[in-house]
Length: 106
Image (cartoon, rainbow, N blue to C red; front, side, top):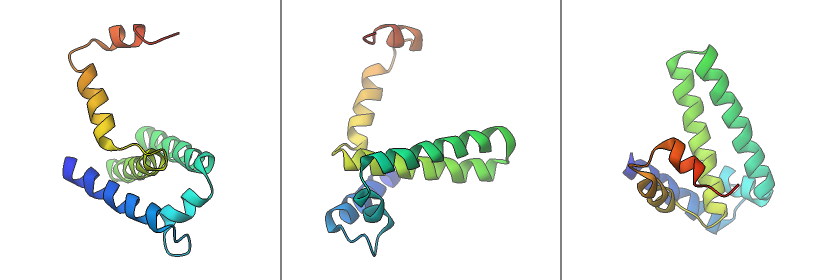
């Protein structure tokens, strides 16, 4: 999974850097701003939830892939990457979910 996400991030980074909205979905979406990227991520999250409760596994895998793709675009647009997500997950490893949530600022 790590190689796949790294490859995805590299492609997204390249397309954002090129900035050719006419040739790239990633660049086109990014040109509309972070708000539009976040909106699209939200739409994909809803579609993933719908697939999880009312569709088959193939549909769920497809929607989850779309969700991760759009999350990767949003992260890249903010200058963030999977390495930062992995570091945060590593930091949380071994901590109860309840304890981790309770430690967050209110």
